[in-house]
Length: 474
Image (tube, rainbow, N blue to C red):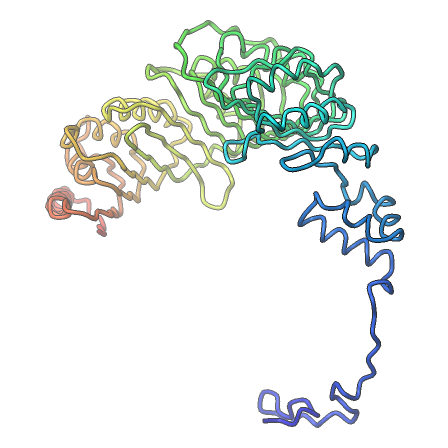
């Protein structure tokens, strides 16, 4: 072991002479520094780190000493000081102590967070009555709390973040006096009806994230009214609309005279009926939209020309290379992606019979293939329980016939044998299904492994006899 007085005398096999000066810790002078010796700038940086971990506890800092209090209040904006109205806080006392700070109301707002208890409602109302100080609301609204919200008389002029959730079976309707100003940047509502929503959205030009879930009347919530409200949102980056599966009442949607341009919109998440989506997409342009997820609630999906036209206007969606089809007990979906790019196009249908799922997917791909014919990699995963639909190859055959350009095919799940058998049937012209197929990869655990091997051997033999040699991995 080397003497602690010197550094290592060898480095990478070469000799390094010892230092001439003393290097032991005992020979360095030690000056004790207390926290009081730190400069204001250093203390401010420490406060930044501390409040980044626990932003609710800044009042503890200002009670330490006058100097800390001066530093904190001199940097209120930089430290993002807020009064938090949440579980376990004495709201009235806190609001009186700090009359200038913005207020954050946080009682639920998502299924993962605890909703307010009846004894919390007076605290919530006391905070919300300070409407000109509210910067953020995350709230699970109960029926008893809803009755008290009518006592709020002034709009939330400084509100930047609003998240509302109803856990009750029926949607709750906010009082008409529940208003916000133009500073709002995020709006999330789940099973909440806002009577003056479109009027408020017209002035919410700073919105970045708009999420309206479990909307219960798609006809009153018309696509025209929504696209008109979106027309001024130049900063909107994410739009998510989920409708409840009410009766599918088709309505003719007239095309708006002018489209709303959303220049920075990158994410669209829609769940509802196809006719509504057609009306919505007819009224917007989103040239940077990369992440598109569309879930249809109606099974009779036959034609959607506006969707195809909309996708065709977005350059990033013209070069998808991979497709992943996932069939579960309740839904089927297809996701289109491209390596190294953030773009994703996902279409999904909620229905249970496998025959209807495959019919939907065949129709979807029949519409999309003209614009998205570059897919070379296909993955099909099935998580359905084995049952009476096993052995029906016609649905798989119709679907696979649409993927003429696929070179790499991955199969997983308990219906792999059916898919391989469908590959052996002749295509519509008596030729080969997926004629460009180069490699087939299959993951099939469980007791049906032997039937799968027999199907694969038969498939390889038929391809070899037809002059199409492929690589198969199981």
